[in-house]
Image 1 (spheres, rainbow, N blue to C red):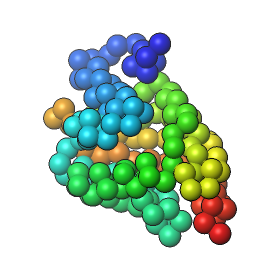
Image 2: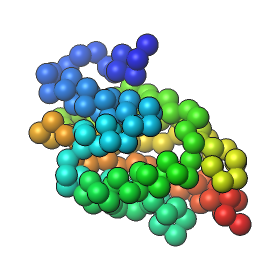
Image 3: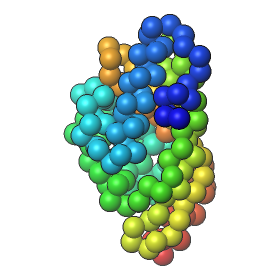
Image 4: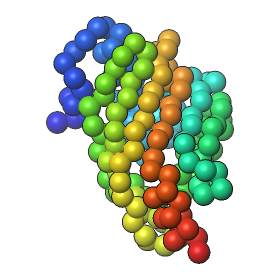
Amino acid sequence: MSPSDLDAAPGTEQSNEIGRIVNAALDAWVDGDLERMLSHVAEDVIYTLYLAEADVPFAGETRGKPAVRAALQLMRQTFDYILFRRFPLIIEGVTARHQVEFMYRHITTGEMLTGRFRIVWTVENGLIQRSDEYHDAERIKAFMRLVYS
């Protein structure tokens, strides 16, 4: 079963298109193909990882495709993605949201970080305009203290 098969029953044509765009971007991310992933993103995209920048170097709000590329490259240089299991998308208007279950291996230390987080996507004009990612901030802070102390 592909991740796009997990989506709710087909809705409007717009909902289906939003689901296709988000899933295509995530498929590329899981495959490790950053450029293919970014092909689904607007030039003026806003990516917000709701964690303290003092705890995670790629956290906070990042604006524009070049800056988002740099943040995502740093993410991939920091963690190996062992598991990235998406839950069904819920699409309302131009917004899609879902949970992700993850397992990451910190590349330098080999320590494992596991959990779930939420992503809220905004898709307009056939491209991702915004991505807001919500994690358990205290859990991530404690993990980062562990690997960097």
